[in-house]
Amino acid sequence: MKALDVLKKIYGYDKFRGHQEKIIESVMENKDVLALMPTGGGKSLCFQIPAILKPGTAIVISPLISLMQNQVMALKQFGIEAEFINSSNMSEIENIKDRISNIKLLYISPERFQQVSFQKWLMENVNISFFAIDEAHCVSRWGHDFRPDYVKLADIKTKFKKPIIALTATADLKTREDIAVQLKFKEYLVFLANFNRPNIKILVKEKNNYKKQLMEFLKGHKNESGIIYCLSRKKVDETAEFLNASGIRALAYHAGMGSEERRKKQDSFIFEENIIMVATIAFGMGIDKPDVRFVVHLDMPQNIESYYQEIGRAGRDGEESVAILFYSMQDYVLRNQMIFRSDNSIKMTEFAKLNEMLAFSETLNCKRNYLMDYFGSNHVVCNKCESCLNKEPKVDATELAKIVIKAIEATGQFFGMTYIAQLLKGKNVKNIKEDHKRLKLFGIVQDDEEIIKKTMRQMLVLKILKIDTASGFNNIVIENRDFEKVLIKKQINIEVDESEYDTQDSVLERLKGLRTRIAQREGIPAYLVLHDKSIKEMAKKKPKTPKALEKIHGWGEIKMKKYSKDFLTLLNSI
Image 1 (cartoon, helix red, strand yellow):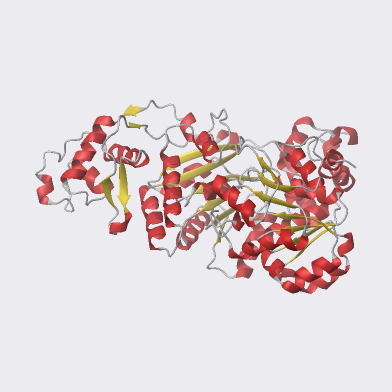
Image 2 (cartoon, rainbow, N blue to C red):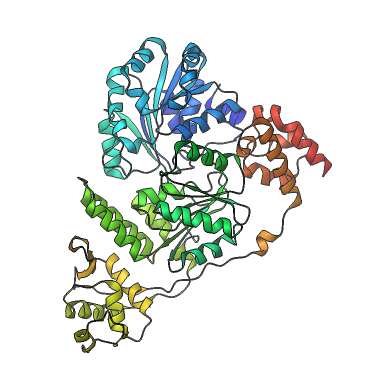
């Protein structure tokens, strides 16, 4: 059987995406591979299909219990022998070991792999086809999510002498090179996928009243599953409580909760439809829920890698989805302070990454292509990001920027952004020093205070100004007086077309209802029965025969045997 046959027969897909086929061929030829593919880009197929085709057992190293459980559950749905070994299933380990010769994929944690006794068992009892290392950026100290438990994976090549495929969704050039060094790759192939996720609309809004802004956004996303990220546990709890009080079902999730409570909430999110998870970054890695329609950030992420990985949890099924970031300079300052106070040997790298995040948030150019540049991908046609959708003309704020420079100099470079803006606006507030009120600059600017702040933020991005975090006062200082032009744009509001969500397609709803009933009957998430893409295509084409149903996306041989009768009965009754 060939890879394409497996893709169609088992997974129900007609063709590979991007570099998938070439990666699979390389793994089949026992070559070491470093594959960088966006979240939702089909990384798992790159090692699952070779594991099915090759003799022996593929060992998949994954950092998260939830990821292992989800992928093993999905593989079993397809009739593939797969198991995982971690702290959650200790009682089943001996049974799994007894059946190892029949298992095509064995998922293990990096902590389990470290155990000498476990490695000895692997060497003596398992016909290993190859190793797959998921979330491979965790190997590198330069990666955004370095994990000490991954360091010992460096022994795989020397101890087992088996090919390795290392996979990650987020790694810049420095991190990619370090992954290869850590895993002792000599001759290896690198596959760098285009990092564009064209189905995700990318919105970035200045934060003022975040609860009001959030509710406006959610009006356009009724009866959809989504993730809302917050920086603090307190904000997670407050936001979830606020949403529930507003009649929107939301769960709170953060590391301050017990492991059992977190597990139950994670299961609810995976198994149920139309549910919102409000969480810190403790939630998300390994969540393979394809019908997440939106990801909201209520605070600025710490770097672009984290942001990109988090928004990548939306629209993994390829359907239209939205990522929206609400941010403020307070977020940036707080992140700066956290880095400054941390006992971290790579502080300068973290400061630089945070500045990139601010630049992305503030750029007037295409935000999608900003991400493409950051990850080394080619430019794409966008028309679906904040900058491309904002048709407001750019405003020349160069003269205002020069006045800002004079005000910062006149006040000794010892004050923050709000102070300078209020001084230039001429606000008679008590925190403005009396001698500063006597300056010619006091009240010289007629523009709104927000326009002054917006100009200063662009000056930060252009490295004309910088925040002096080391002083402890977060004062604005001048970094470069030699600049040509500063441009700004006004923010556009979130537009909500509620009519689109008030009309329900009865066929689609009936198909979704049947999917839910089957999922509950089998004790699996609804998306493992069929993805939204399949359901929508069926609602549109209304196939009435097995032959017609087979042409619908996602209907492989296994699913035809399991579910075709139920769905055809419904479709023929419509």
